[in-house]
Amino acid sequence: MSAGALDRSGQRQWLSGPLPDPSDAARGRASDLPRVTVVTPSFNQGAYLEETIRSVLMQGYPNLEYIIMDGGSTDNSVDIIRRYEPWLATWTSAGDGGQSAAINAGWRRATGEIVAWQNADDAYCEGAIHNAVRTLQSDPSLAMAYGHCIAIDANGRRFATLEVPRAFSALAMLRSFNNIVPSTTAFIRKSVVDEIGPLDTSLHYTMDFEYVLRLGLRHPAAFDEGIRSLIRVHDDAKSTKGLIAGLMEMYGIVRRLKEASSDRTIVSACIEGLAIGATRLSLAHGASGDFAAALRWRAISLRHALTRPLSGSMLALLVPGRMFPGVRRYRADGSPLGVRMVPIGADQSAHSTPHGKPKSIAASRT
Image (cartoon, rainbow, N blue to C red; front, side):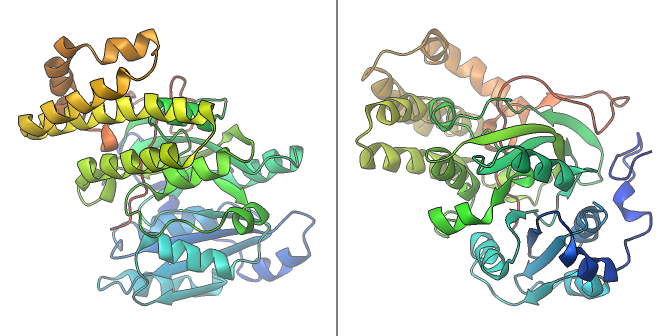
């Protein structure tokens, strides 16, 4: 079995197998391959952190710079980090202002030409870094390379694929009210980070959505089949606990972009996205039992819809009679931020290729 795969029992395979010689990191400085800096922000994720660390180190990429920014964890996280200190470029454990601030601080220390972040409860699949570098080297105009994810539970058992579109479009993200780029698979040129600035530290759940929009409205990006990650969905994950709060953040991001833009195409895409976002908020409130809020957001959705011609699929989504069946489906789905996952069978490989429409989950650091 390939490293990083999961067997049918859900065994976490990254926890076994040899690590590279830590001196390889120093030798990698002379590699012809560009340096890649991966930052892991962490806070009290000791149950999963070791698997994340090993999934990065066991990529076998010769010019890797790995930085861990711990927010002052009180569990066993620091003990785990110290165990892997020989392989790390640097690490800290102190109050840091939250996940976005921790990633920004790590990126400021980065010396790599390409940067990424990997959440402390998620993991890369085999070959992710090599494939991202290959994609970015193939086209110097690309600002970002990304791939797709397999959803796993707290015990590491696969249960769904997160379907990611092959064609990148920031306008499609706006129209669908959806982040088509899983942050756990994104690799970004450091020069682009320097140009567009850091993550927005005011956002707690959807900083990845805002950042990909900011990047995508200026630069092209590309999907690569070989960039894969395992994203863990569990009760303590931010995107699981903060469903409505995450949707509210996304709604605010799109609304502010609409108000700030003079580009009619962007404004039109924002209006359609706001209509869908308000519909999702209506469904989320309905699923939580707050039907007054559900009706209020349904009215907001219809108000947006009446301001411009909408597609047939959009009109179908807004049919009032679909609201309460939608609530039932939404409650049964259980997907973070209300975005559908596609269940997979126990006999499917963690490296199987998903197909279909966009899927996004916000970063999951508590």
